[in-house]
Every structure is written in C-alpha cells, then in structure tokens.
Length: 435
Image (cartoon, rainbow, N blue to C red; front, top):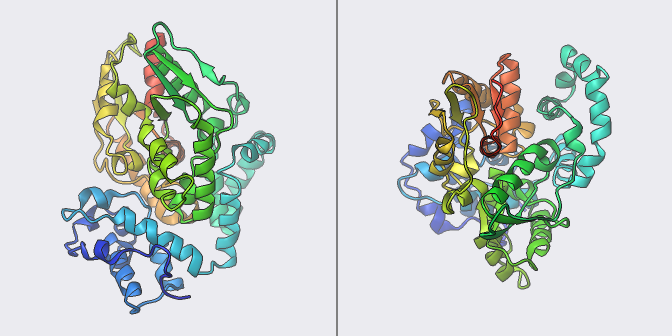
C-alpha cells in the first residue's frame, strides 16, 4: 500500500481549508531549522493532498517530512484560516505507521521507546542500573569520549537528557486518598504520569499538597498507567487506545469534580480521549465523560477560588521566566492562567523571553528521533530564557524541563528550573528558595 488506506485518511475538506498563505512558516520550528517548504505545515498539507489524489505516494521520501514535524501545533494558533492541522496530522501519522515500513534503525529505537517509556514499572526496574551507570564514572567516560554519539546519535540523544537518579526516583509513596486540609470543597483525581512519577516525583507531591491546601480531597488510583501521549503523537493507534482504556477504567468508579494532570503533553492527550476512542462502542461515551473532567492543575487552580495563603519565596524580589509548553499553549490554549498564579506569590516578578511560543525541541520523543533539529531548537530556547536575566525558569512539562536542562548544562548555566506548582507549594509552606 503506497497511498492512504480507507481507515480515517486526512479529510479533503480539512485539507482544502488551507489557502497556502504561508503565515504558518514563521512559527513552524521545523521549517525555521530545516528551511524546506515540505518541512512546513503548508508543505505537509500539499503532500497530504497529493497522496489523497494519487499524485504522490507514502514512501521514504514523503514520510520523512511528516516525521520532521514536532506536532507543537504552533501553526494551529497562527493560522488565520483556522486550518485544523492537528486533526490532519493525527490522521496522517497512523497512515505512515501502517503503510510505510521503517528501516532497521528506526524500528529498533521506536521499539525501545514504545516498550519502555509508557510503562512506569518497566522504567522503575531500570533505575538501579541507571544509578550505577551515573555513579560509577561510566556516564562521564562515555560523554567525554563522544563514542555513543558516533555509534548511535539517537541513543546518545536519549542518554543526554537522562536526569540524575536520586532517592526520590524510587519513591512511590503517595496514598490513594489524601484528604483536604480544612473544609473539603472538591474531590479530584490525580494522574501521576510515567516520566513524571519517576524523575519528577517532587512535582507530584507538590501538586497533591497544593490541591489539599485549597480544599481538595485527592484520589490517586494505584491502577493508573500511562496517559497514551507518546504513542498517540507518533501514530501508534492500538497501543494508545489500550492505554487510554486502562486510564479510564482506573478512574471510572470515582465520583470526581475534576481529573488533574500536571504535565502539559499528557493533559492534551487526556483531553483527546473522546477522539482517540470515538469508534469504540464500549468506551466512546466513557472517553467523552473522562475527557470533559480533565484539567491541567494550573487551569483548575485558576477556575476555583485559591484559598491557601502564599508567602514570599526569597527575601528579595524573585524574577521568574515562565516557559510555555506547546501542548499547554497551543494544544490546550492555557497561557494566562499559569502567569496569573505565579503573580499571586508575593515578590515574584515575571519576565518574558523572545520567541516564547517557539518549541524547545522536546515534543514528546522528537528529541530522540530527530536529535539534530531538536538540539538546534533547544539551544535557541535556552539562550532566550537565559537572556531574560531571570533567576528561575518555571516549566510545566517534564519533557520540556529535561530538554531545557540539557541545554542549560551545555551552557554551564546555573539557572534554576522548577515546575510552577512547586513554586506555589514552597510559597504555601513558607519555604525559601535558594538561588
């Protein structure tokens, strides 16, 4: 099969809504780095149309242009014609996966990623050898020689964003029910994530504390797994649907006012469950109901009355730059709320970077599959954040945080990076941040 098959191909009416004005080019990160028309939203829509009409085929040459897309959705925000590029991309990527065989290198790295990252228990089993790797001197040796990058750039890219394994990485001690502090106002579910629960467990703990401090009972089902963001963004339909069903089943018996997520990429996918399971007769309605309750933690805290008292984080003014995660900004249209929350903290002054809407290059697993383009974007993002002169970066997505931290380290920058919810948690507790 060399053309789109009959299962949900990109719809001609969505393709035809593009008037090829080119407004998307300036905001498309892949086009800005690669500089080729076919690596822009407009060029990819041309390709979709050509494949639909039989004027082009799904092959190595065409599929690489869809692979080069970060899926950041900046073009959706920019487009004056309202082209739903997100839906076009979501329809195209499964077609590529079904109809274009991958080469051996691609198959190996994708098999590793999709059989590891969406499964927290498997990831947890890797923590001891990863700790040994980091603390035995082997990591330093490999990085100094650069041999891994020469042998396999993609595996080297994966290794380069590996966070420091600490005692927190082994912790899995959040109870299934955490009662509200004071009067209970809401009953919310909380999703732990995969990378988040292992490498950013303090963020989950901070999220629970901030929610309970604002009158929320927090429910954390132990049966929950991956939200399905990684396979969804890469067109792995069957795996995504399986993981989405498991997530729904974990929360379906709970009577909840909202389902809270603190990772931007995960939140966007969770809100798309109705689309992901639209053709499943058993889960279609459940998925719609689940998605309707999903809220990013910053979105939720902005919707309710924030009742917890906030204290200064430093003895002097604290300058913070907020990093817009693409799937929060472009996917969920959440930008103002995080800034409003941060401004509630006494003594916090926000600064804005240039090119704030440009993707950092993480984009799920993009920085592992397309490391050269991702690195260029990461360098630009780190430079723009450093140039604000801020003392701290507030980053609401684990993938963005890993990518930005890598490039801060490459610059020998000591700029501190925390999740916005951690800043709120410190402020509620009256703890000071060392800058």
